[in-house]
Length: 454
Image (cartoon, rainbow, N blue to C red; front, side):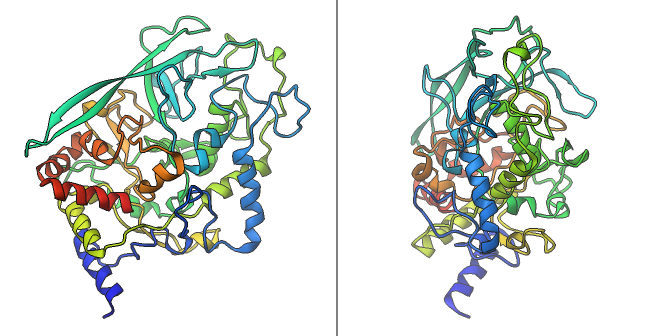
């Protein structure tokens, strides 16, 4: 047995799998060996050269700054009139992760979902009758933005069992200057930071049965972990489907997620979301002519979805195999891998050959977990409760600082690094957090370095 095979075998025993992908290639053959600022923006390494034209067409659309429909630009017009950003890449800069705004700054990478108590007939949250399902912080003149969002933080200092002190910060959100009337007393809010978008196609190709095999909603094995699927309405499939995308797994497909973001974030209509993202109580549509019907034509939607599906996953980064062994063992012993499932096999019948039959290491189960009251947004989303969040993938986590210039984590970016993200875990993850806290400082650092290398 060669050294690499031995290494894979040992690591497999640590995380409890019988077969394991090469840990340096989390995206299988799609893996990109690029650790520069462009690490998240590369096409899958095994992508058919004939498909690169569609990839780069989608890339252009993803990075396009949309303009208002009175502009001379044709085909990329129809912005707003209410919106959060002018392009996909403004939130997902270099296909990476957004961060909360600084004090007094208008958000780019963070948005606030809103709703009122109750559900629509398809199970989705009820939109506010005036302000819809998210707050638009920008607008075209003379219309005002819907509201102003400010984030402030309370610094909290605590100690590990060994006496080492640590600090975490708790966000407080202020929404003020509502421009279109009173919001009422029942408004439900949920801050969301834009996640990285590479590797989505591989997640899309994980068979539903593989995801559902890890679900244990009643905790029948009594391990304290009870992952649940979120069954949601899919506009692209026009039926109830397994949710895989979004912080609460509230989108079933990349097309649903993409078209929904064009409508909600940029004010661009599509075949899946043909209505503007404002109410008649806010905007006289005659003052802001449309950029087309729909504004995002079907071919452009297909190209940007293809682009998102075929972004390659950056290679893992570790120099010392023994350190990686130690961190991986601690990760497994703390039962982090119970939710951050290391490995999946993609289906063999994908219509994108590059994504088919890949052994991948995303470190997510794509299921909902109760993360405790401290992380709760108290806003249900389809079958997700106010305490539940989808397990986010961990691949590429250590490159966020290089690509996006920050290390902010969790659904609202409150955690300033991996350590703080772990320390915010609660609910089903409380035991894992406590196991991490009981480790000696050197072993806590080894676990953090392991996650940072994925």
